Length: 117
Image 1 (cartoon, rainbow, N blue to C red):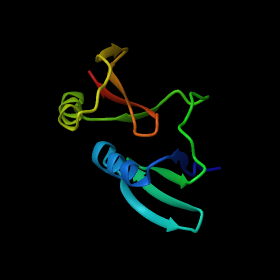
Image 2 (tube, rainbow, N blue to C red; image 1 turned 180 degrees about the horizontal axis):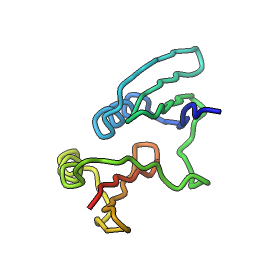
Image 3 (spheres, rainbow, N blue to C red; image 1 turned 45 degrees about the horizontal axis):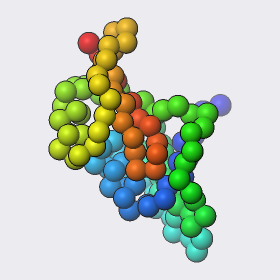
Image 4 (tube, rainbow, N blue to C red; image 1 turned 30 degrees about the vertical axis):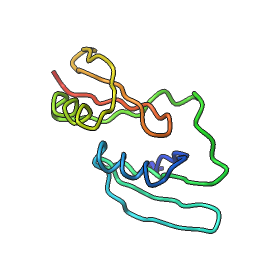
């Protein structure tokens, strides 16, 4: 068995693409437009994320997935980037041998940046 991708419902596909490209450095792999939906597959650090836009999508409520984490080289650089983009994030904290922050995405997703200390 091999991992495939993570599917995330989005409300505003263009805003979501801009966020994923700008904040998470995602690259679009495929963009499918159908009469009732749009599916955009993006690669982020070796993981495939599928943004799913349908007119029936509603804002995401808290569910079983707590957050999606990405390893980064420099947490300070990422915090500067988030500051420049006006994106709020949690107070940095050290957990074991890592320093972490959390922030929200445009569809109520919760993300974490993790850097080694």
